[in-house]
Length: 272
Image (cartoon, rainbow, N blue to C red):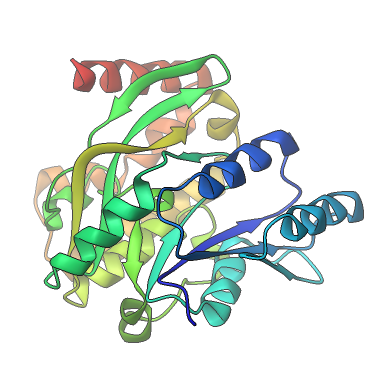
């Protein structure tokens, strides 16, 4: 029998590996049991690959897909989608955590709300020191909610698989590296799909200084180009839209530690 949910994850030399083990354990602890877990190894070194094979051997619901070289997260997620058998597709990243009720609550929402194509949630923000804030997302995102940033936490979202059949899969071009999630949500919204964010913290999203350092200047320029095209397609105009188009440059000119502290402050305000 096909599982109800396919959880998909793409990894490449995850470090430290213990974070991936913790992420996988958070799926194994789900109160919903009708799932499969597809992990695409995007050309990791052999030592990591052996660990992933051991992980896959620990539970028959874990399916390991192996790539011969590194092609990027969008490519890896598309390989998972091509092999997924579930009615619903749940994203997961190798350094985040799903709280135990996440899959069950999200699947029940999609079961009872056919008018929505995907379902996200709020999230606790954490790093190696622990939880430092809460990110609250807009309940029913409209086009204006795409101005500042993506109105969905990508690894915390569950989709109907039919959405990918209608709108296509992840964009694998080099210009979409680091913003493939923003692009696919824009594209789905433009094509008439709609999502919802449960106002519950069902996820723990890792945000640390290392993550900001990985966001190179070139990728910020690519995101500006994506914003320009996406905003135009959604009819987002005016001074605020113009300013938001160039928001990625803020992260490029500020030191990673300062930029992160600014986001920490915003999240703590939202938590109050």
